Image (cartoon, rainbow, N blue to C red; front, side, top):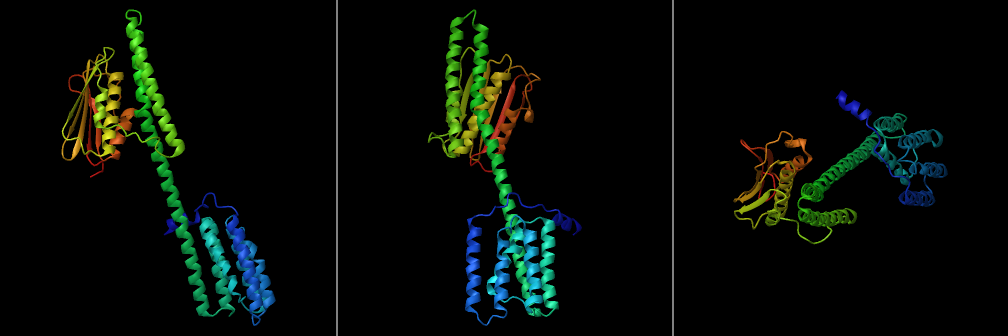
Length: 378
């Protein structure tokens, strides 16, 4: 209980409270005529002139109810509490019910300290009015019920807004992570391919100039693809919508990774099982995992001559295995130490699957992944 009270007391104000907007002017513009109209239509109202003056004098508190909620509550309920000393009774204007907006604003936009202090002022005003017989017991109880209802509504909306803000922050974080994965899996893949081809071209430029020219053609093609995919990502980010209607790559597109170029290891692809009704998100994830695994093998597998990509499907899951026959170098990244492998594991985990990478018992490196066909966690 003590911790709860301490947390309430230390509660900060909600960030960025709305400034005075057109709705505030509209509210005041409605309340003022209603107060005047009630004063004119109720000739039997006790102390009619003073009651109308008090009601009109407190209307400006509505303008600062968000920026200075405690001060506005203190002014309104102190004045209304002292009014019976002047007019001999509680102001009986029905339109003064607009003051209920102030307790709501106090608990909606005030800090914990302000809410406690303001709540004490409000409850003290009700109790003193009942003690001096300006309110009956039933009216006092009704006042308590109404005030606590306003407090509860404001508190509920306050924490609902906080929850929504947290959900929005979480969505932004997930979106940033998705963009990072897409950049790594698309643009970074092509840049890595360009770097590998450039290194190969430099190595054979003096003894085989034609091979260097071929490497430049490959670099040009990869650069064109990288630019196209970068434009696609930028368009989607700016327009907040898909850049085009082209389908995302899937499992059949893995065959495009096949390479028999002399500049690098040969890539063989084998697709087994029923791959027709795989969820599109799963197909894209398998393709990206295979793409990243092949890129890592070309970059890190020293003296590798062959990279094998095998995709096998059964009734419940899709399994991917990418193996190379390169040297098992201790500098090759393992697990979360690499952004690429960390992104692969994260991508698989989001779809309810797993992804692992590590050296083979004798030679080479293997990446294995298993995803459910439907792309949902069990």
